[in-house]
Length: 415
Image 1 (cartoon, rainbow, N blue to C red):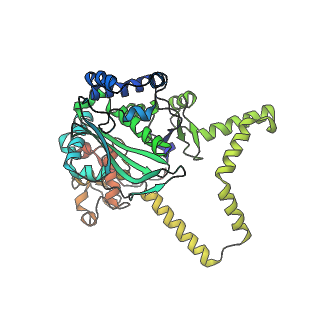
Image 2 (image 1 turned 135 degrees about the vertical axis):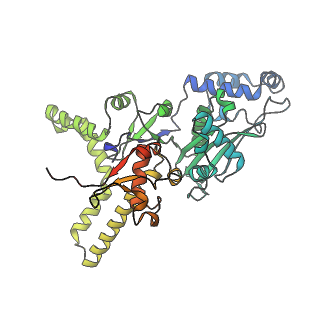
Image 3 (image 1 turned 90 degrees about the vertical axis):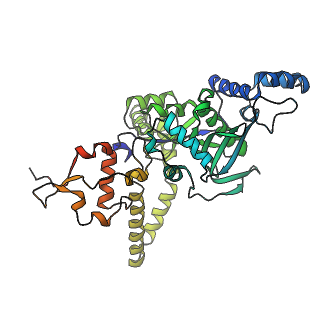
């Protein structure tokens, strides 16, 4: 459970229709556009394709994100003249190519400073390619066609791939899975440009929401995610969205685990004591939230009370509950969590744990893992098996310490 996690992670989302880029974000877009277009093109284009006074005035007063994001693209620029560079962005299937892997390898090794032996084609394929989401399309209420599924948004300058945004496109959101770029364009703030382009995609295509991925407040590398506003954070308990404003961030600074619904309930109770139920706006809001979130559950409970289940339906319910618990437990597999700092399943499969030292109630001496009868019959990927549980522990402690640890399975004697 998040409350007991060392690094609680929270889901964020941004309303693209309400997003207003900051001065720093606007400057990043303009700086990149000037680099692609070039001063010569800007002067010649102004002479050959002049804008009206009203258009110049509008651009001076209004920063249209979608317009400015597309501005340097080769298919948008008017010619002649020719820009300094040809810039294209394409939304492609999330399949593996050597071209994409070269960007991934450079990004992981140079930007993330991962050892060369930790970066592999297999890891790239498993992590960022061939998602189980099926690709398709739908027409939204606004009449716009939206792509669905997992894609690679590929950025090319002069025909050379320089960055890849890995996206999951869902009916109402653009979910940012990962963003990687070549070190040669680091000075152009590609991460910031990628986020702004994804927000523009959400706004332009009618997805509305942009999900920047999980947020861990005490992880400095994730702080960039909260630079885009207005964002909302999903409460881990009542599953409602709360504005991630200064007050909310102050809570993150002060508390290891933040639950906004509990805070609201506490405020509501305090108001009740002081002003009475009818005067407690905090309670009214909390009740509305709970009533909305639990409406279906309450209705279902009433129906269940009206008709007691037969033995056969009770058995079916028990089976479904057991299956649901099994699925929930499998979702907790540490090696499949993509948690920062935890080796992946593929990486743990390469770790030699045969010499790991164990202690057990069934032996007075130390045991070597490879001497266990079931050791060679199990695999690290078999969630719930002894071998997978040991692999999770080794991953959490650190595979580099495998020669210095002993796993003690002995039960503690009652005191």
